[in-house]
Image 1 (cartoon, rainbow, N blue to C red):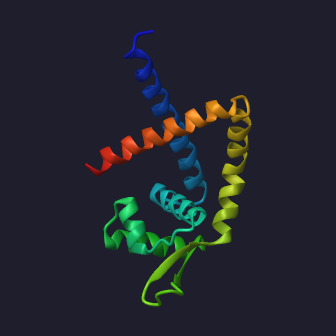
Image 2: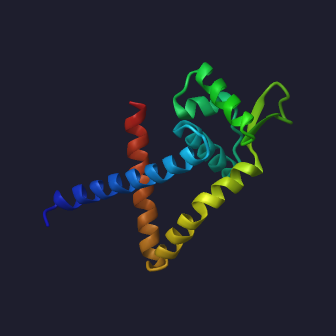
Length: 151
């Protein structure tokens, strides 16, 4: 295989995986009366919580590329559905932070838990060095896409 063909094959595999994950996420959103942006917001909030980061409505809107009105609508919708809540930041009472409700976690685990378990099981066929290479590869590809999106 040529030097160009293998990278292009990997690009196509990444695109295919992205499409499959998007379709899986769209099914979750549809079953739960959510817009795809709602799902992206929940994922962002869950990832931030795992990293110990505080997310304000402004930061959420920035991360999702939404204007202030769109962000307010999104947060209102997710709060109405009982998936997130607004809370005053204990360090700065002027600031509002967004927190994911347990209901959202349970919905996500109920739908995505099987897939996540299958993904983890599939990873067991690879050694630690291969998984490290895969992690570094995915981080590098994510960085390239994030940079292109910002330009």
